[in-house]
Amino acid sequence: MIRSVITGCAGHLPERVLTNAELADMVDTSDEWITARTGIKQRHIAAEGETTSDLAVGAARKAMDAAGVDASDIDLIIVATATPDHTFPATATTVQSRLGVRKGAAFDIQAVCSGFIYGLATADNFLKAGQFRRALLIGAETFSRILDWDDRTTCVLFGDGAGAVVLEGQQGAGGNGDRGVLTTHIHADGRHHDLLYVDGGPSKTQTVGHLRMSGKEVFRHAVTNLSAVIHEALDATGMQPGDIDWVVPHQANKRILDGTARKFGLDAAKVVVTVDQHGNTSAASVPLALSAAVADGRIRRGDVLLLEAMGGGFTWGSALVRW
Ligand code: UT7
Image 1 (cartoon, protein in one colour):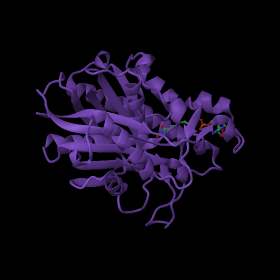
Image 2 (cartoon, protein in one colour):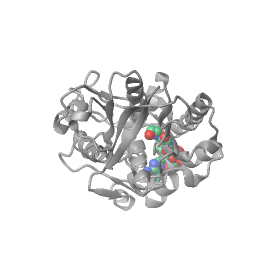
Image 3 (cartoon, rainbow, N blue to C red):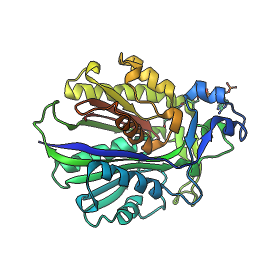
């Protein structure tokens, strides 16, 4: 069978760093509160005029270099984002044009913080079906543009950034020993729209709007849904928690990461954590964390990775990947 093997990955962050101390000058908060409740110490914020596609292109170029491919090798581009440059066309088509890719398909996926997992499932199925051969999957966000900077319950949590992977269809034996994506699982439950949403949009308000979240409720659902979808990935492959070398989770809150690891009896040292440095970058957080752990040599060829995320919608998902 064909397996979708990740042949390169990279992240790209805006230069500007916004610290907790600076936020404490803007709203009624403190470094102590943010650190204790979330684990976040700082986040990156896009410069004026710096767009989601700018960050996406930055990550994509580095991921393509890492994979040793050029524009003529890519035939599918997926950008997972909830903060596109424009209502339409898809940010993926802007990325396609700027990278000089001239064939295949390019489209956006909107599953908010689960966008990268949704994109991975989508790309994997296209590659396994043989419809495309090399996919560029990017999670890219400029959440700073949809934050209410007067709302301390949300503005301290999010940041901007992008992460990208190149996926290539390669022949595998069909077992857990194969390199590449071993299994993906994605879910949605639209009944929870009001717990995490943006209060604007082209059709409803003709405005961009601001992010609104009932944090405590989202936290509760995140712990339950992530646990269920991790079990699902393990059941589908017959793997055990002990087979996982690295957990590469969506980075919303250090407490969620710790709690999930504890639930599966996983050593906290096996969980890749970037939320302290990046905050919650929505669809960019999983590929940014992946890139960080690949770049510093923690993730090595043959390692089994568990990717998972949960976000607005609600949407959630997981994947097992052998590096
Ligand atoms: O990426 C998509 C998925 N998103 C998530 O998974 C996020 C899930 N939720 C969370 O991570 C947490 O619920 C938060 C970090 C958002 C909030 O933490 P919490 O422990 O649930 O705090 P809380 O909302 O219950 O607020 C506790 C107190 C409140 O004050 P009172 O009512 O107890 O007097 C808040 O008003 O903390 C107050 N508070 C703050 N204080 C200082 C809320 N935000 C802040 C703040 N600084 N920034």
